[in-house]
Image (tube, rainbow, N blue to C red; front, side, top):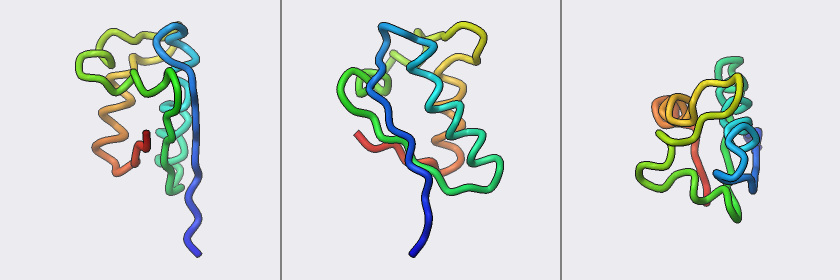
Length: 80
């Protein structure tokens, strides 16, 4: 059976830092050679709405649009 790291979150735009952390974790895991997917539930589903990623900027971390682009470019599946 193939192993895939699943990272799930329910944090939405009300806390930009917490909302982006799963995407940063997924990027790091992928860069380390781990297969990874992200599961968005509840408020987190709003993060992938058109135009939203450009407005979500956590404190001390790259903007959501940057890590979301990485996820798309590197076959990190996002489940809603």
